[in-house]
Image 1: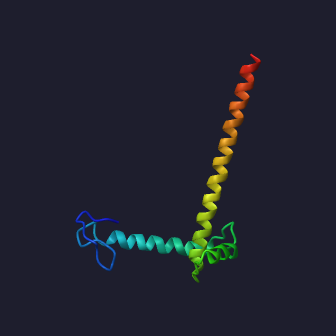
Image 2: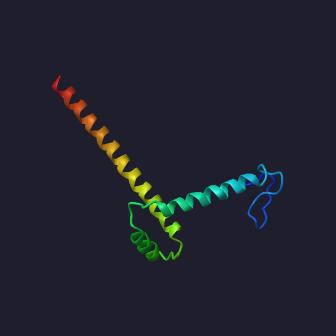
Image 3: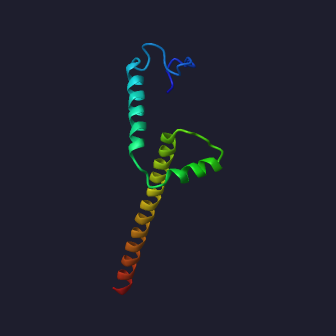
Length: 107
């Protein structure tokens, strides 16, 4: 977050008093993040944790926190799902154009 005062912020990484609506918003964000990370432990992603840990390790990233591994797995799953969805949409649009073109040639 950037403050309008142009200051660099302190070690808390936040804004000074009176800037950005006070400390309640930050506390709410941290609580929401903590809750989200705890729900990751209950969720079993499509991509196994071992596979994610293998590729994270190959890239030089080592983290003992399983929640972070699950977060990467969920993000990867979303990325692959978006690619598959976009590919299906493209295929359907190409097929409909081809059918339209064939119908126009027959007429």
